[in-house]
Length: 207
Ligand SMILES: [Zn+2]
Image (cartoon, rainbow, N blue to C red; front, top):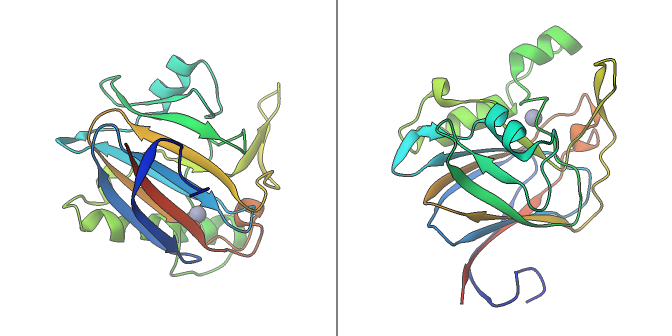
């Protein structure tokens, strides 16, 4: 099939609806492909070592060891203990954010003056509960398909995404991990193009 890496077998394929959430344990060597079906849809992403969830995605370690503020093909996702949890093996988009974190009902009250019941943080809380993990396990996340621009003087803002319909990124588990995502429900900034849309997730194993 077109949507899976060559030389691999498909284990799972699922549409995550607009504003939805998803998680799965991936064994070492399995790959997760995220497909931005309609374009400009931020996917907030966390991952945890399956055997020791307290060893989890650490973005300062990831930025320092990749020597880049962006995640893209060739980047590795490092844990608190500087272990490689996952690596990015394919990326048709080119820019994925490490800086802006996830939206929450609380920050949207502060920055937009709106009262909401849905956010990436509420999605993360709900999804992590299924793994016995609580809100305190939410750490800084990667925002796939989200464009955050930063300037030399430090100015930073969420910009229009460069992600096109069908853009995809593939992450290979380098150890057993729990991958958790929120299909960002944000409607008040360009993270989801002001109109959240579905994504597709595909899990594959090497043949
Ligand atoms: Zn969000």
